Every structure is written in structure tokens, then in C-alpha cells.
Image 1 (cartoon, rainbow, N blue to C red):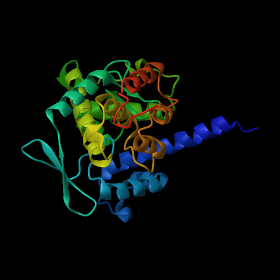
Image 2 (spheres, rainbow, N blue to C red):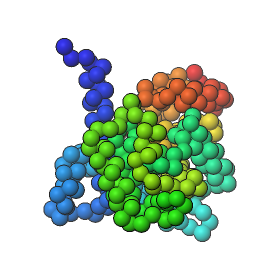
Image 3 (cartoon, rainbow, N blue to C red):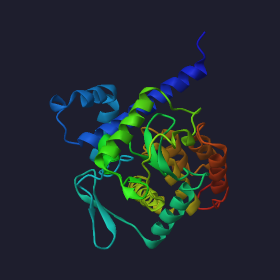
Image 4 (cartoon, rainbow, N blue to C red):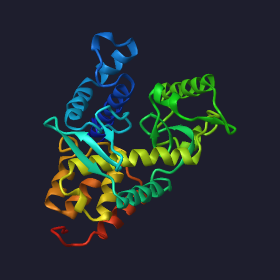
Length: 297
């Protein structure tokens, strides 16, 4: 007899794997690829995650800065004033400002992420629960090119290309052997490679990631600028882990935000996979949101 909970979990896990594969694919080949000129391995990845890749590409027409971990496309221009100019849906540009308050928020989030209540900071390489090669503060380096671009160190000196290749291949082998999942802590992988990153490098990457997330939230969630700081933190944390908070992928979260319904938001923003300390952090921030300007339980 089929356990419906196990079946639902398997379906959700497979969907997440395809989403990650889509991001890896676009990281590697870019946005203007020719499907007839893909290598065998890239063709396999494209076939596996075609629907998710097509969805991401459609989304990119509206969102020129929108994939978790994907390199920044050329449409983004950083102005001297510290604001970002992004392509909008009708082909015109939209300016997104990063204020001093925003920078304070980004710094606060990185400080949270580096704690064990958040992502935690790891200088070594590990496989996340879905089998993706990761380091730092949840930094996905599963794509070979991304991995090779990392400022890896061995005993304080820069790693050679050969040492990077050996490290990457070692973790591909671990992934292929299915040595990942909830039963494996990140410490399990600490001695599998001598490659390390510095804490400063890990924080830099987390800050870049968080800034990208903030820009997208500002751009795509109406009224985000006026949200309480605690709610901004919750949404940044959610996006850091799940990617875009679109109506397609997270309709109930967006509905709760539209209704300013904190009870509904609590139900759909906290995921079963969240650890207890992370759930507690989310709840503390939710309960600190002032009940005014329409926000209610």
C-alpha cells in the first residue's frame, strides 16, 4: 500500500531537483543557448528539467535579475548612485534603489545566515540534503564553472586548477554514490577535500546573494518598501532558500501578503524542512510585526 505522505514528499523532492537542475543549466550555458548545439551532458540536463528551464526563461523576460545563484545578466546596470536599473515587462527600465537602510538590512541578514540558527558558515565543501555541492553560507557551487571560479584555498595558499578539479570530481563521485540527505551532517564531508574558503569570502558571497534577493523583492512585491523590517527579514530568508517568491510557485504566500494576513502567512511561510531554531526565528519576527496599516492575525 502506497503511503501518500511518502509519495507527496517524493514528488516534491523531484520537483526541487528539477528546479535546481534548471538553475545549474542556465548558470552554465547562459540564456541564449541553442538546444541543437548542447553537449551530451547539457542535453541530458535540459531534457530532465525542460519545463523548469522554460519557466525560468519566461520569468526572465519579466525579471532580468531573478535566478537564485544565476550569474547576473547583461540587462542589469549599476549606476553611480548605487541604484540598479532593470529591464521591465514593457521593455523600459525600472530603477531600484539600495538605501543605507537596505544595506543595514543586508548586513543584519548575513549576520543571521552565518549563525547555526540560519544557514551556518562552513569553510569546507559539503553536499546539501538534495545532493548539491555547497560551501560557505549555503553557497551553491554545483556547476563546474561556478566551482572553478571560487577562491579556493589549501593551507592558506590559492588552490591550483588541478586541485580544484580533483575536489569537484570527488564530490561528484560522492553525489553519484548518494552519500547525501538528512542522515549526513555537513561535518561528514569535512575531510573529503582540503579545499577551503575564507570566512570573509563566504560572507561576501552571502551579501551579494542577499542584495540580489532584496532587489527582486523590491521589484516584484508591491508595497515591499513599506513592509515592517521583521517581515522583510522573513521574506529575504524565504527567498534565500527557495528562490523567487512568485505567484506561480508560492501563490498562498503571495495571497497572504496581499491580504496582510499573518496567520495565513505563518502557515505557508514555515516549511516542514525548516529546523526548529529557524521556525522559532520566523515566529519571533512574525509576532514582532506591528498590527497596523492592515496587518492582522
